[in-house]
Length: 217
Ligand SMILES: [Fe+2]
Image 1 (tube, rainbow, N blue to C red):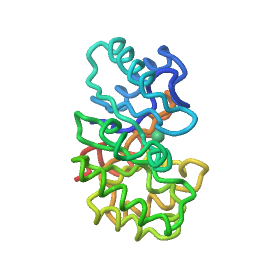
Image 2 (image 1 turned 90 degrees about the horizontal axis):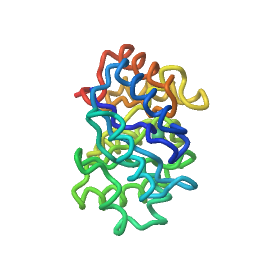
Image 3 (image 1 turned 45 degrees about the horizontal axis):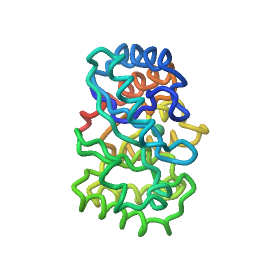
């Protein structure tokens, strides 16, 4: 199974601190059943440094002795607005998968949706398949899960982050995730792993929902 969202690259964001930890994460990923991955460091303040992240990917791929992996980013919407979709949109997706992993703003309201839609159309116009990272964490969707259906109608793929299985980050997104599963809106479960132990949650989430990452429909 493919893990399409993880912070396994060494020393570039709030994920793995160094190469030794990255390799320990890789071992945990394999033990959880992951057979390929997209490495997706944060494109978000204060972490984003494109050249450093690509260099970390090259170093990690060499150290990982042939494990199938591709480079991508978890692109925060506000950061993308700041960088410019036209300039950076073509560079920040995962080329091999044709996927662009977009993170919306955690404390968004429904009023932000039209702006998100414009960005999604722009990215789709560049040929990307837009994947929305962890919709269960966004305030607007927690208040109104129908907004997540709207994103699916826009032809986005929704990705659950495995920590929903223990209540989610800050302990409050688990309920929304379960609702979105009931509504049949997710396409992927990903680890969103920042540390070794997060792969245990991926295993539990996939077992709990009887699905494998990348194989939900
Ligand atoms: Fe993430």
